[in-house]
Image (cartoon, rainbow over all chains, first blue to last red):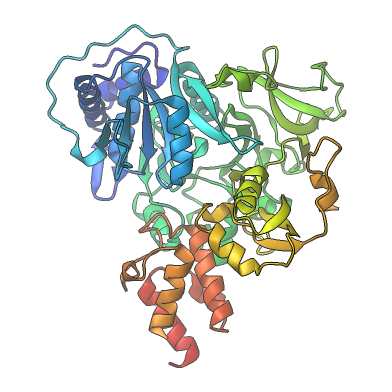
Length: 488
Length: 76
């Protein structure tokens, strides 16, 4: 048994281990782990952390690789009250360094952990799995911080979002309730675990007492389909860019799984109406659940396509009775139905604070979290998005700050000024891609030279796809880039 | 032709050429994700001036399968 009343997630896993000990919780390649074994692994991992001196309140950087030890360490930290700072294993070194500088972790866990001399680094595979020491569990509350997830801020500097045990369990509970998850689902997880969406799917499946099959990613659709087939999967999650990829590479082959797939969760970026219609046609009996939310207010609203077949424009309604949404003006006053304003969210899954409390200032109106998305509530009670206040570029679900790209381009020293905006992906896959406008410094430098050097500074999804030379960047009197003018 | 295809894959994924072995498959390494896979397909189509038939794209899951497909399309 594990006694962790602060964590509804651990409580549910403990319950499953007691009631269905031999039920498979996780599958990774040839390795299947039952709920009973999962609990043992979590206990061992917690023991390992404890022998290394990690304790309640410490923070660890956990590089998210899609493998079983990541899950054990992630849950072990929850058990001990150690805060997980989950980062992408493929994060560029400067981003990782910046996060480490901010959170000052007591240790780093992951495979091929970076060479950082003053912080202990533990490889997933090299942890002692036979730890016998008794666990000393501190008294925690559900409001203690469980995870810190870093998101892209509009200025380019990553913002740490603190999520409590109550937040992450609340989000999973809301989501499972909406989707109608049971304890006999088998889900194929090809989404990355470093993102709120993929990590959320892991928690949803374990909360429900179902089975999660880890798949490296969607690149090899043949492998993904084989997993759907051989495990008789009943559900999966995907971002809109993945749907475009599935369509492009496999046509309608996925239709042969329509009878077995009970649910698909979709999110992280808008999905064109014609794709919603195509999904309705291919999956006539599947719950097609599209969420609207962000790391700070995960899965705030849901829309199920079959239930909204005549109203596919909506992002839906609050995910559960424990979530509220409203539309406020700049001063925080409520706006009438049909009037555009900022969509604001309150509920059991909404963060109480950023890691740096300075980031809270413009992020809340009282209990309401300000999403930065523009829209209104219709007279039907559904919410509709009409624009985005924040200037982030949504590249296939990856949020990219234009400022990050601009800083990188300017740092090369070849140009006088630059600005980046989102433009539609000409290939129709990623939704948006970055476009860079450059102002020459004297003679124009070959764009290929800039692209080549930029590839060393930015991850592939942040590299501009379109480039254009212009005479000057439109700016306000205070120097702020007028991106709307560039779009026009 | 084989070396050209492998060079493109290495360049697009930003990985050393010696990692591009025949049995390397999409999804084996983080760099070869769905976006990387699309970039490989479009770069090969552009630089080698060919077009993969839609019905074949699903089966292009490894370095070897891509090399074989390019050979077939170019009668190499």
